[in-house]
Image (cartoon, rainbow, N blue to C red):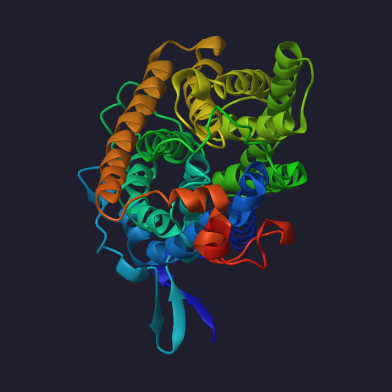
Length: 435
């Protein structure tokens, strides 16, 4: 069939369209990358379950988004909090058949259907991030129920509040009169949102059996390094793609992303060397992710030199923060709180210090800094309350935890009827393992 655009929207910019399709593909790759990053960090008896939590999120969110997720994120605003889910239900108005030809709504040279493809990948990776906090102990069915409710009640409204023109946390919101809030690619929407949810779930679900008493070391560090590499690669779509054009802004975001990530890795490794006496591969991979997280909201606002400072501080803060779970007694299995919440908060707030336009260190006043702190706090409160309600509802109804025998004997075998490695029960049944 011939592709036709709706005439009144103007011509399609094929360069921008191509760049956004590539960026969307990069970001989609991040979720399998995250699966390997998390999968390598868990014990061998849990690796398939960890991979499945990310892939399950891809499957469910990919369906929900085209039904009402796009509409809730970017549809007609309801009080600046969320979009009307029925406004563009099933992508109504985004494309249609006209006289036997496809007609596509075009915005600024970009077919909106391409933007839908780009944005769904953000929703998928955000909810998948949370899974690392509850590794090794949660029923897969309960996780999938959580995915559906959380992306609907937490992610879509947060995306609307921050990125919709009429959103509560955007330029036209109540805080926009102080200074224009900045979240280039998802500091609040993705990382603070997911980091707070991870903390709440870790508290509600409870600790793994043996947490703090027996070693729970990563079973495959090459998987962790591979996952970090795939995340770094995919993040160029995340950040540079958020410039919505193959131009200098995308180039700046690309360079800032690389620079901050490199600096964060060095900062984490230096912290390990001083504190523990040796830098580790797990620390290098975790430092990479911390830097990627921190630069996400700031990629379009900083200089490459400012990104170095942002990254180093992110690496040090997250390297120190991952130990807080032992001090405060919450079991954030794979350090989602220490990396995504901490570096997400730092990256969001640091814009008020390091932004070339309005940053305190570049001659600005406290207005931008104040607004960045406010939007971070609102994101924390909103995500915390919504996640708490969903988590408690699941706990009181279908329950979160697998049986103790399944957790000890192997969640892969109990939940999925298979195991990753022959020596961990590939030829045994769950009943045989639990005898």
